[in-house]
Image: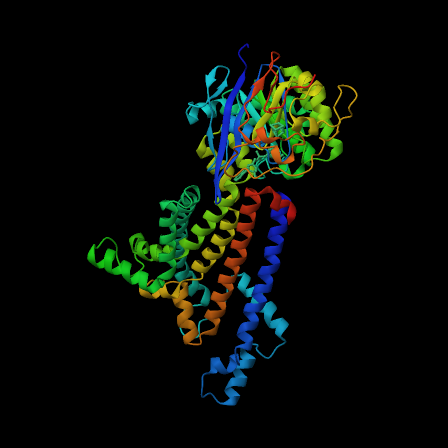
Length: 324
Length: 306
Ligand SMILES: Nc1ncnc2c1ncn2[C@@H]1O[C@H](COP(=O)(O)OP(=O)(O)OP(=O)(O)O)[C@@H](O)[C@H]1O
Ligand code: SF4
Ligand SMILES: [Mg+2]
C-alpha cells in the first residue's frame, strides 16, 4: 500500500474515571491518502471525537493516548514534541468541531480569529491575512465577507459560525482536515449545505478529509473509504463500495439497514437503529463488544475477536464467515 | 461601543444626581441642623435666628437646588469644628487616601491575578493548594492584626519602611500592603474560578487547534474572558479603599478620608460628613461606570445586552 498521508495503527485512548479506566478508543486503525475522504460513522459515544482529537494531540486533560503508529506525511507524531505538534496544528492539519456555537472566542472579532493561524504560522503579514480571510469567507459562502471581519461571533448564526470555523481551518492551506460532526448542532436545512460545501472544498483543494457524520447519504456521495466504529473499536473499515456493497460486520449491516446508493439515497438519511445500547467502556472487553446486541452471536464470540482483512483492503472484526 | 459609553455616562449622571439628593437629605433628617449649629444650650430664639440666617426655613427643594449649585462649584459648606471649608478639608485628606487605595489595589491585583491563573492551570496540585492557603490566611487575619504584624516585622525589626505618618512615598508601602493583602484573596478566588471555567471552553480547544503557543492561549484567549467578573469586583473594592479604611489609616496614623469621616461623625460635624458621603458616593458611581466600560471592551456581548 502506498504511503498514506495519515496513518493510524492501533490507537487507544484511555480516560481514568472513578470506576476504573474508560477504554474510549481501542486499537483503532485508520489511514487516509492525499485527496481522499474517510468517513467515520457510529453511534454516539463510540469514540469518534476522541479518535480525531487524539490524532490532533488535543485530548482533554487526563486522557492518555497510545498507538503502534501515528504518522502524518511520514512523520512520527507519537514522539513529536509539543512544539512540533503546534507547528503542524492549524497549519498542515486542521480541525473543525461538533460545537459551532461555542468554538469561536466571544471576545475577539471574526477577522482577528481568522488571521491568527495565518500570522502565527508565518504565512504572511496582516494585510495578506485579511485578504486571505476575505477570500476564504467568500469561498465558504459568506456574503459581505469584508464586513464580517469586524463582527463578533455572537452576531452570527450557528451556520455562519461553522462556515467561519471552516474558513479558519483552511487559512494556512492544510493537507489534512478533520471535521467532527460539523453539522450535528445545526438546523436540518443548513446541514446539507455545509456538508456539500465541505465536499466541494475537499475536491477543489485536494484535502485529505476525515469526516465524522451521521448522514449516510453524504457518506455514500463523498467517501473514498468508510470506517465504522463501535464501542471504541473500528469494527469495519474499507473502500466505500466494499463497506456499502458487502458489509461484513453485523453492526454495519444494522446501520445500513437502508443501504445508501450513490445518487439515490436522499441526503439526510439517518443511520439505521439497532435495538439495545452501547455497553460500558469501563474496564474493556474480553469478548466481541457487540455480542449483547448481535443477532448472530454465538459461543465463540465470547473470545477476543481478531481483525480480518480481504485482498481489497476491507477489514472487519467478526468471527462470521463472509456470506457470498 | 461609543453609544454604549454614552448611555453609561448618562446613567452615571442620573445616579450621581440621586446620590446627591440622598446625601443632602441624610443631613436634613439627621436632626435639627439649626439647633446643632447653635450649640447644645442655645435659647430657642437663637436657634430660630440661625435657622433664618442659614435659610433653613425655606422649602426643601429650594435648599437642595441651592446646595447642589454650590456643591457643583466646589463649595460644600463649612466645617463646624475646623476653620477650613469642607472642600478644603477633603482636598487636603483625599490625596493620601487616593494614593493608598491605588497602591493597595495595584498590589492586590498583582498578587491575585497571577496567583489565580497559576492556581487554575495547576488545579488540584500544590500550586492550587498554596494559593488557597494564602487566600484563607489573607481572609482569616483581621486587618488591624495583619497591619500590626507588618509594623512589627518590617517597620520595627527589619526597619525597611516607615511605620507611621503620610510624609513621602515610603510611608505608604506598609499600609498599602495591609490594604491589598486583605482584598487579594477574593480577587484571587474569582480569577481562579473564571479561568477554570474558561479553560474548559470549546474556544480554548479551538485556540490549541490553531497551534498557538500556550501563553497566547492563556492570556489572549482565556484571561480576557475570565477577568470580566474580576473587574467588577475590583472596582467595588477600589471604591471601598477610596472611601478610606479607618482601621488602616488609624494604625498607620495616615491623615486620610476614612479617618476624617470617623472624626467628623464622632464630633457631629455634619457638613464634613455630608461632603465625604457625597464625594465617596460619586467615586462609586464613576468606578462602576469605568468598570462597565472596561468590561464592555473586554466582552463585546455586554455592549449589546445593556
Ligand atoms: N473528558 C472526558 N472524560 C470522561 N469521559 C469522556 C471524556 N470525553 C469523552 N468521554 C467518553 O468517551 C467515550 C467516547 O467519546 P466521544 O466523544 O469520542 O464519542 P463520539 O463518538 O464522538 O460521540 P458523539 O457522536 O456523541 O459525538 C464516551 O463514552 C464519552 O462519554
Ligand atoms: S463476533 Fe459474534 S457477536 Fe461479534 S459481531 Fe460477529 S457474530 Fe456478532
Ligand atoms: Mg463526537
